[in-house]
Amino acid sequence: MEKIAIITDSTADLDVKYAEENNIIILPFRIIYKDREYRDNIDIKAQEVYDNIKVEIPTSSLPSMADIEDAFNKFTEEGYTHVIAVTLSTGLSGINNAIKLVSENFPELTTTVFDSRSISEGEGYIVKEVRRMIDEGKSYEEIVDTLPKIRSSIKIFFIVDTLEYLVKGGRIGKVTGAIGTILNLKPIICVGEDGKYFTYDKVRGKKQAVKRIHELAIESLKAGKELGIYDGNGKVDADKLYEELKSWCSDNKVGTVRRAGSISPVAGVHSGPGLIAIAIVDK
Image (tube, rainbow, N blue to C red; front, top):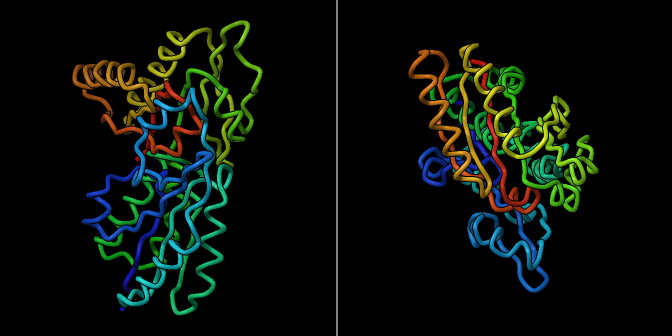
């Protein structure tokens, strides 16, 4: 009989209690300062990163190989036969390959390491869908075959106060790094089908950027899609956007919107403060 384990990483932004209750192992990325190192969202919280970011911009590294090996040893000891790992986009990180390398040392476990080609709410949504399908009694093969379709149903759009941190962290993707300084142009950044960031649109100023995100959200809600709003040290603007969209949904009785949480500390390292994002799911 199949027994399927789930593993992901800390950029999926899963609620810790939810993960514990659903037997999902979260591998923490590392946040590295000159004189100290932290496990993402365990030893350090996002606000601590933002509070320190003007003093020192930390770097990041993958979850340790020991953490990954410990997870697979646990799966073996607990009688699991299959493993589904959902990871941060390979366009942004090498975590997918690291898990694949470790899984090769556990041939007794049939393992799929799935590239979410996403981050935060997008990655986390896929993990939750895997859990739901396991609970419904779907087979390993059925779940694995369904994952690409789930991935293709997700779109992520976000804005940041400045591209400085994406540039320094090497996460700029296809977003033009020179945008904005003189003309105050703000890119609306999307996660592409290749899992890399690209400029979806450009507007002038933060206010217009938030307005454009609002327009994209309304377009999606009119189409009956689900919407999640999250932030990275942009709580005030994200809360305001949520309240506006919730009111719109109530009046028009179309689509659903929810206020998700904040991005992980390690994601905050690379985005910097002021991120506002929407995750759109086409059910």
